[in-house]
Image 1 (cartoon, one colour):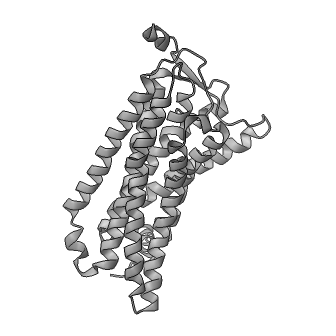
Image 2: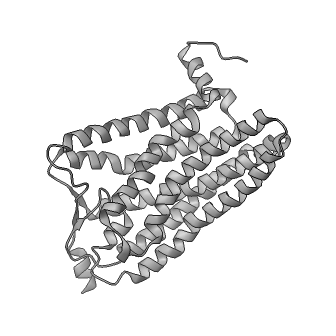
Image 3: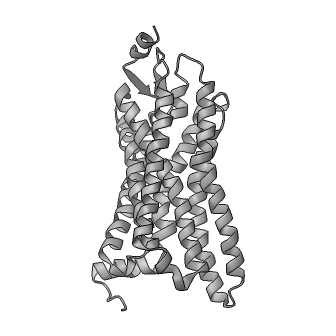
Length: 312
């Protein structure tokens, strides 16, 4: 009987945002512009770092990985959201919903752990500058990124399997702009308390553990920075750390609130706003906060454009 109920739902309806007909074109234009800027900003970062040999360092390797994840992360949800804003049809098939949920989680969990890896990179660069290139070898950097990706694949698989094993027999209206686990679980025709427990436990491994690691590392970084005698050196180190902390806060804090609270306490409108932060706003701000204001990236941009010869 459970199998029959589950197969009775073949598609979902994504309700998205509750905009009035008059304001919908305005929000469509705003989201479209944001998405194009996400593609432009992150794409530019990837191209510049790939073309400039001076930027082939561990830090920029991680930044390229972050930009790639952000491109995929936003592309998983935004084109569909824009299509639904532009038309009356807001359906998504059951299989497409599962695929979107899984891909979104893979990229999100991978990015969460990547932030922890990037904090390790900053720790080595600030606390062990003379051994930085030896410790953060290309091989080690690739292994770290591979670990993040594998953790994302496994964690996302657990999230998705536990969510979609439940029967969905109607209604089929998801009060969200994409198929995110907490929103989909509200439509399940069964008790989701086990899913709440699984989400909370996995939340530790994919959000709290990386955040705790980042916190411990930055305590050690700040202690090391305070020992720097040069005021300019301290300012430069603090500036690098501030960029990373800002990016982590915009992404991880809303994600932690979303995935670690019980489903009974979830508010659809609040959830949609939280999702915008770690899905759209984070991908939009990352190139600005972490890369485009960086002097090395600016120099690479001017060099590629041929506007000024980059200093050797």
